[in-house]
Image (cartoon, rainbow, N blue to C red; front, side, top):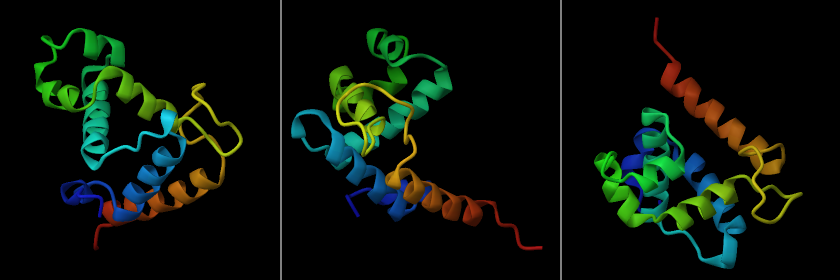
Length: 127
């Protein structure tokens, strides 16, 4: 389970597995991502959304965003950006040129299906 038990409250094991596998395939330099780095990456994405700032703003002003310090300690800026870039890669384009996350390809179709399954479980209300 990649050592990510607490993440399964929000992400199904299938979603985590798909994301981890995709990142591992496309990450720059072949330096495989650890489960701790994956957790820090997801948490940093949440902080970026919460504060509505760019990664550069968050990393350059650590004092102002001290609540994200633990994640920043685990995942330095360059590593964060390498993982971010890996998510923008697809089967057709290998490299670190950024494209929209999960641009149409086989991975996107599988990922979309898993997210839809998870969303239907979360949103279902017994009547």
